[in-house]
Length: 351
Ligand code: BGC
Image (cartoon, rainbow, N blue to C red; front, side, top):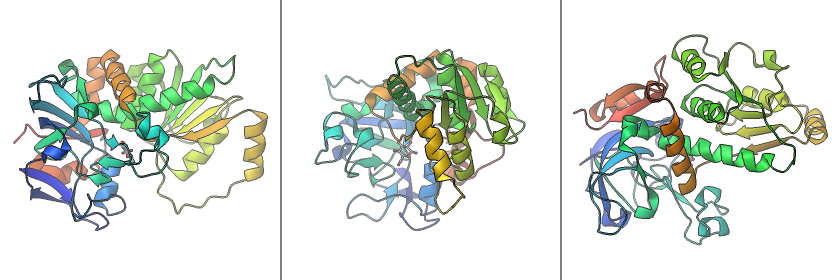
């Protein structure tokens, strides 16, 4: 079968390769891939800046935002032929650490976790995949192609869960305003979940026109562009930072009001030193009881919450997030950023 592979740490090594059928060691559920979402992590993998191949192998099959249809599943495993499934990305570390032992592999404490399509395990950019029932999430076929958004949405479902847990440290925490920085798929999904919570939602992005502002408006949220500093009076209770752009990260942290929570959900590339008044930052954070925290990945509970949240969203709005569908053989186009892109999907059914 065909799969999209890279040689980790080697820039531009990506190719469509003939690979063996997925090994039974990957799990007893055999599924046919329907669609694969492409994200910034995949572009980092292809550029050679990220990723680890499975032990004693050179190549890694990439892909971690999956939607597949079950072809075969053992009796009694909870899945049957025809089910639509999304694969969970992370596997617990083998020790396991206390978090992984408790099913919270997203909170792994020793870094020995593996991730499908990213770190030490083949991913989902293949015609057929195998999954363990514990790491497969059944999704409503009514979600159609948009079920491919369950994985990125799971990362944000976790972020929201963490925000609410942190907020509950203060008896009187009653957030009203949320600012999301970045109107890519992660930012738009964060805004969707904010609106679903009944919160006044603002989204900041550098794009001034096109689909992104319309998607934000149609959600019932407010779109902002230009200078982030122009939002100084907004005093959001929560900021969800989804750009990873150093300057935005710093400004975002400074924007919140008292009891402010800044959730960092975007990964910065490093190497961007900025002038930072640590004293002022410390003073503000201490005197306002502010929290800044980072979040990554998701466990099963978050995938389930993400699927439920997507199902509650307007079906047309949801489907507008997928801006391009590219057949597998045109994978290079899928990895190329184009103006107006929100989520680009490799469509395995289009041959
Ligand atoms: C994925 C996460 C993963 C992270 C770090 C993200 O793109 O969505 O599941 O944990 O990359 O590898």
